[in-house]
Length: 343
Image (tube, rainbow, N blue to C red; front, side, top):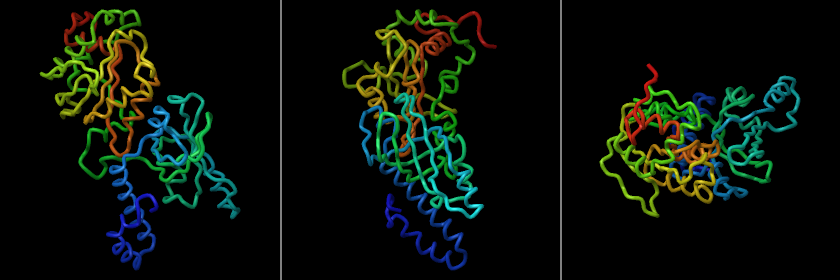
């Protein structure tokens, strides 16, 4: 209520009051639904940053509000349940923590909360063991090892459950990452086996970034190929990409052979500013292509930006191996289809 404001649920108060005359538990449910709807609207309007974004940008401060969708390790609910069963007081708070190795190796974020603030019986089991959770919280203290934070909301995102399906809705299982095999424009790669090792990447060393961009534009059917300039947010913007049979606005960033080594966060500018610029495009799918391998921290950076709950979006990483598969599948840049392919 403090977050979204009392006025946000004023239109529902009369209905909630009327329900209360009949059924008090139903009244509580109606209040929670009204608050949930207000929270959803608040997220879309304010679009708070993810914890990953704040860590990447070096801008995390005490009292900073953020969202974080990741695997959490939950503890304390078992002891709390046993204490309640025996009629004993619950001494300690419940706790959930998540490792932040993809952003800061060795650091974790920890949330502590009270059992009386749980809004459903299922919360007791959903906050036990290892769970993938969405948390909207605020940092209270920050050290090199631990970020302590208070949770405003602990939940599961269920986008599109009661509305028209969105491109994002069906991809939460992969943390909003899509792979080239499911993009309709690259369907032929399903018949191409991946290269066998790093030596196969050498073929990309001699192919300029501009040729790779031209090849991708031709494959997806994009007629306009922009020239590179210093202020661009992406290298190629198109509405001709299709995902699940539907067109989706897409922005590409290409990293050519000038950096012919496994891509790290340092290759993407200070504080990942190239990723920040890419996600400033009005696109629903953001694609980062590289001529070599792509390291896990880069995936973490893309995930951090994609999972902004006010405007969640899809992302795709195309490393050198997948680049070769695409070029071979469509006979681009002088790479013919290999004799051996998946039947």
